[in-house]
Image (tube, rainbow, N blue to C red):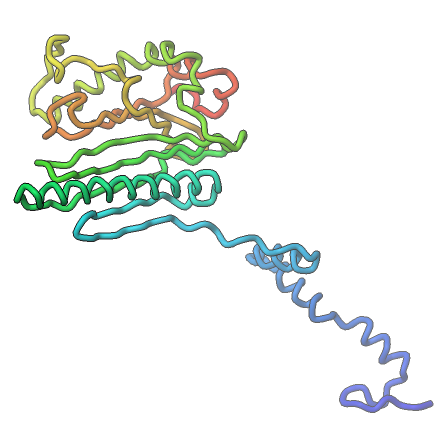
Length: 284
């Protein structure tokens, strides 16, 4: 019988050689085995996708940040990776960036022209908007923004906003849409909010607050007219709502803003519509 020549196989019958070849793992099979080792879940998934002809998943989204400083305007805009990975939100923020920057530049140019004509020095304007994550649960992504605008006056102004993304329905929704009614929610949080606001005022002022409806800076304000931000500590359920109060709304400018955190309690949870209650923590 003829012998097969070759290193390591010389002297073996042809049938034995074929059997050895059939039993030897292919390169792809070896790769699959290596990918299946503990800790290689991602590699195994990518290998399976390649074998099935499916494209590899895109890289994770990154936080967005744009900064620019000129003689006219100091500009900054940013939002977190959780928002960047949702196309609708990335588009929304991208449009807001373009419009906000264009409007700020237009105002700065007009102010610079007016200052030059009047013989006054021009002070560069500023616009800074940053979104941060307040809650990222299986059901909701809640974002809070803080913005700063300066147009050449004695001081700038700080503002706040909130955005709620419903992951289940893949759309933006209003915080008030989660409530049985704004009036019911207001009644559920009113007393707790007023007491917590007075406590925060007292800490800033160094003395107890004597509440008076005749004084804008001691009376309780309407929490529903402020920015309501759902929050989560553990990333599983919404466990609180923070009422963000901007400058001048509850005290003089020097006091700045107030953030009054209200944990979920029985009254608040009852004021949430039934279809959303599973996304909220049980009453503390």
